[in-house]
Amino acid sequence: MVSTLPMLSTKIGKNYKIRLAPTLGAIYNLCMRIISRKALREFWEVHTDARQALEAWYLDTKRAKWETPSDIKSIYRNVSFVANNRVVFNIKGNHYRLVVVIVYQKGIVYIRFVGTHGEYDKIDATRV
Image 1 (tube, rainbow, N blue to C red):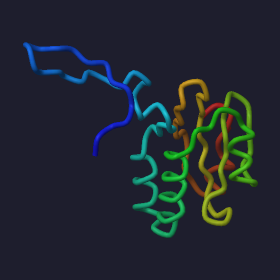
Image 2 (image 1 turned 45 degrees about the vertical axis):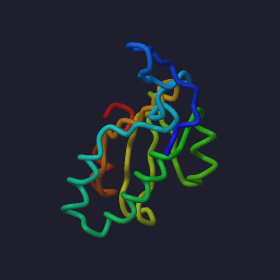
Image 3 (image 1 turned 180 degrees about the vertical axis):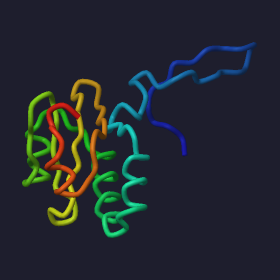
Image 4 (image 1 turned 60 degrees about the vertical axis):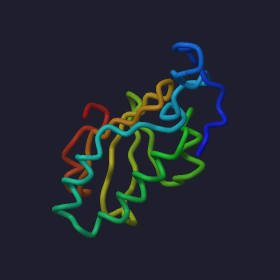
């Protein structure tokens, strides 16, 4: 597949061109970056019933371009916003909780906590 993005290029010799990078920026900046999936995987290895819901959240989030809390709220109606850019998602019909920090300007989602409601009640979501 040939890219339709304009490319920066340089000449080597008389007939060769090397494409260095798209001039519109890297594609991975168009979607959210999630750090780290390992926390989700470790959780669903213990709580196997959460796997499908966490994978669905991961794929939805990875494809999203959240710039404001209202972007998230338009997709996840039951999401809660707490201090320090923390966002609390209800996972698998409110059986589990996922706390993330979102840096909207950079498009990065940091996973800070995944757990049951009992475990969630023992933490301070604004500080994890």
